[in-house]
Length: 466
Image (cartoon, rainbow, N blue to C red; front, side, top):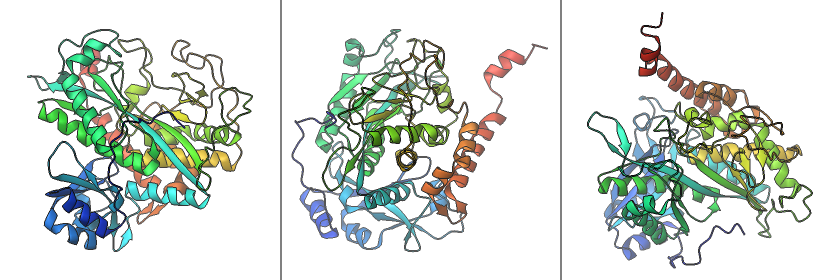
């Protein structure tokens, strides 16, 4: 096992398996409202608040949305309704609000799953994996900052005393924010997610909460609800929780590290674990081939794992953080228990992707990682020897095995996504052509909007320079 789990998890009722079970749960739990929720391509949580009396209609007919109004999800103002169809197994009582529950939904249009919808895309990929007799399990480590607005319209770390150069794991920093951190931990425990660790991270004002690994779709759903939970609890305290990857130029950015493994569906055995590993990491040949595939497709994978202009200020921050480390990769490499690598093997049987940041849409990031890894398995890719260098200290390659440089900007990443045939096939066709082209165009447009804007740095550097 991964060792992620926590034995002191409350005994919760089994998740609903049918509409009848769902209706029974709403009555049993004295639910007044249900949030019918989905996310768009940018990871924005979208929902409608459904009164308990209207839940039977929700389960029977779904709930209509003007898809174009929800943001990037492949719809124009002229398109028919996007209908959110609830996945009853995701029914979740939200412990920070009495009488409130949530259910994750799969968007449909015209009675069919909408191919632009991130949850639909991951579900399709996992169904194809099930046909191979395998299951993808993922553990997530979400990081975020607690900040407050300043009178001038900017932001500052919420805790004025959180100024240490090396604040990571600092008991005093954690203690000053204990009310918020404990509230999040209690909520995660009440949800039954197996919260086992909560800490102050490497940057001032930065925190992480860890919970047990699960099936990839379950973990992706939980990441979305986790962000919502953290932001709502922060707001109740008069603060703002941000999952922006790099809100402060001089501080370490926020990641969403994903711990991945494949399992045999019939036997329940771990397919990445190997007992006779000459490289000493406890991985199987299949596990190494999965690693090889992710490395081979790293630029395109990063395009989904680091989806904003701001993301690439985290990836390129090797020498620009107050703590002296960025904890973010620059090269497509793998190693053992070495956090300077893009892929880390911290223990036998699993591999951690450190190239995904806090802004990532978890459904899309997991789809890209899975597709790349399976391509490595299908072609027996060998990632070579583990990279043992300190890639931050050595300023890059360190003379060790490197597959490629990671994209330096969102524009580079968008081009890599569009150019990758394996990702193109995995994300599939949509009404306007192919999903990767739609996604790449969105990201290129985002970069173009940023690039057209003249910033303070340019004024300071160039105004009287010539």
